[in-house]
Amino acid sequence: MALGYVGVLTMRLEMPWVGNLKEKRALVRPVVERLKVRFPLTVARLDGLDAHDWEVIGVATISNDYGWVKETLKMAADYVASEGPYRVTSEETEITMIGEGDLDEDELED
Image (cartoon, rainbow, N blue to C red; front, side, top):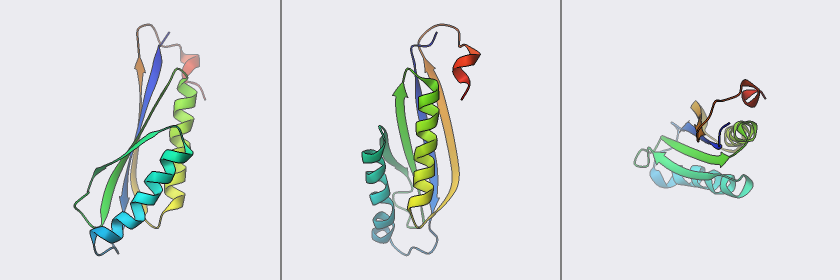
């Protein structure tokens, strides 16, 4: 039995029509802040901070329930995709088991 699960979601946001960093921050920062308030997550701007047309954000959460971690990250991804005037060009989710024991297949079911 696993002690818990850590889930990480990374998303690349692209906005090729943006001409400067200030304009990009005005698009990305509000979504990042609303994501923190709306869901029990830690959110960070990870890469592309000096690029004006793209950025990578990361989202993380932890729980003893695999299904909850998976669903929370999916809701966060859907929220980000629907909230901003940018394109989500890549999305990756990774869920890691914490603790000892065998992972029961029933735990991984939706």
